[in-house]
Length: 205
Image (tube, rainbow, N blue to C red; front, side):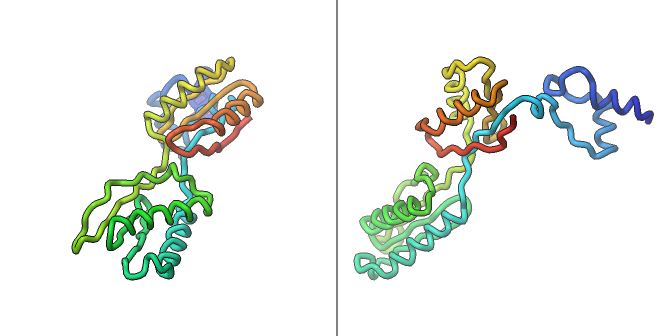
């Protein structure tokens, strides 16, 4: 294929953010292994709002909870344990009272490890064999569509000229023309009380 023709295929004057690649462009990109990247996204100041979990710190908190529960007198003989997995935690104890105390201990260790309690979604306490109790605790990661819509609404309510946001999978991208406007938005969301903890990544200006 002629190099000039290739150049016209990739660098069309029509903004890449506004359209999908044509068949010819798709063929060329597939042959050359070039990723279709929006020039709009690369040129406009932006940042991403995400909600991520540091699983290593969660694991550390779980380990500390189990160590303390194994030595404390009020947990003696209660078989109180917390099991870790990447998507949920499983708590168990000989009684519901000790299970609730175990969950409180877990929360304390999470806070000490700087893990937001908003990442925990406690399920219903269930009865296990021999009168024991168990509970599943989900680990919430990512921004749901509902929370994403809430963030979009809050961005609009900021009423900052040329500041906008869009949901992109499990995160929200905020774009604007001025670096200061993006920093104002970040400061605002740091103080916002949403259902999940927020982090701010991929700042571009």
